[in-house]
Image (cartoon, rainbow, N blue to C red):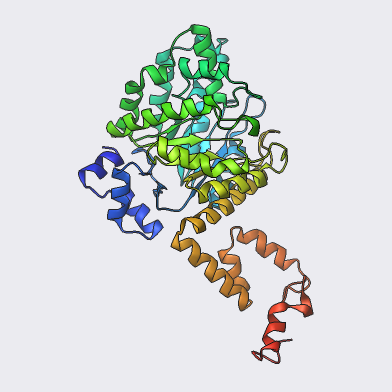
Length: 431
């Protein structure tokens, strides 16, 4: 049975207890939120790791995308990226590989991962067809579902499926005056298949078949936003909203079938629209967990889009987003390196934590309180332990001329805390 089915029966599973322990919450509260569909626990019954929850009332989670491309593929590199992502705090990793031995890559990543693993199965389906000299338009419905079933059996915990790319939503897209058309790889591949074959999207038309597969293995559906805006000028157009309405209906059907489901969101969104987008999704999709890319509130951050994404991600998380997909400095430019992965995860972790503060998550506030107390007493060891990237902070401190003194090189003898102590008589001998 799925976590959702168990929760509706009143059963508290081991995974629910793991989530409760991690969040510092009563297991019954976790069970209730899973039963309501407001919290998901992506954990395939074939994948053994410590479960994490995504959704209402728990800490905002962060995903890191890794994976080969047709231009560059090295399994060892991807495993190093996985290790780095986990090391700096990613809660999930998605394998988006399109080049090299895709079966071996996914199998190794799942076996190697101590966190939940996600995929976009249409990538692998189309990649296999291309390797055989066929085109995207030549793949069959059976091939699509066979790949989904294969990945479910391997142990994939959640899959992105672009079920909202339909003949209707594509007609709406064509009537929109978009600056950029489709920037979703999976969504655009399905659009090509639909337009060439003049048939409905199999993932939409045969949605019950999809639900049966994922329910059997307890794979969480992540309903992809194939019509997300790729430029801030296209945000919240009719195509994006049309797809969101479709996804809301499909989420309702998934829950009724006992399948855990979350919704994916944009994308490139102006700063002033991010909070509204989060609230709109909550209304349309009945508070299904929301998984957002970024969002990116400007299009000019190339090389620094991890910062752009962190700015948007903090606002999104504070406004209700539950799961942030990281953005790396390599976004829009190239395949990310191991160091890019590190920078991307850390930036998103900061954004998620800021969001948790605004959501009133007590563990987040407690962490900031402990950091402030440690800074006030010059407790460098505790400061390093609490910061988002202890290794970087420690290394920077060790390079300082004042590493053995209770000051930083920026202030030195002008340390404000020590001046304050002298001024108010706390300690006349602090300098």
